[in-house]
Length: 289
Image (tube, rainbow, N blue to C red; front, side, top):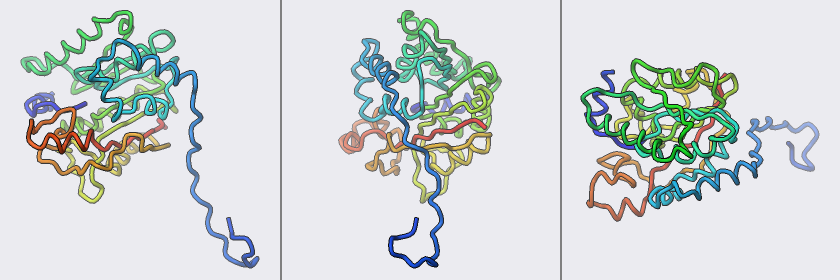
């Protein structure tokens, strides 16, 4: 999930050997096991590509494919159209929702766990209204989406042990900022069946800098993310550089939100931020133990 005003955050808080070597030469230790490269699922790839080409996607959303790599990302996580999937905090515009819902509509099941309402907070209220309006606008695509909540007072994102996969895109920093990241990760663990997959994409912080527990600049170090998630009963099974961006210097006054698509600094240094593109993102695949 991308930026939200600090007022919103405050409101939510309240809630082998070489050839010819001597026979007695020491044998080097075996290389650690590495995950085998996934076999590309042609049928699933074709299904995702068909959805990505659908008329439900705006030109602006299509333009972000260059940075978000939805086809490669979803294939890396191992999604299949017959799965039960939960997308956690889909965001105001539902960027991934408009891909996942049509993909899962006919043979799978799809939950979106949104942020909870905050009575009296206009931003949150309007954001939720906009998301629901999006779902209502195309019942042929979104009519089977099951909406749940995730936040203080409600962490039941799907029936326990019911999901094959939970997906979280760019929102771990939000939960850290709000102080309930352990609860959010526990909710995802609870919703997954044993062996189920958690797919995480997140703005990757500078490993040379200490991790701010509140991730105020929107960045989370890969080490911190892995430790936090594994502590909740997951194991890291693979990682990918699909969404990496070496141009991201991660040192902006406005945090990650200086970059597109937010441009929090307005027109100031906009050409610089356009040239950088969207943030450097880690893409991590975990399995529920």
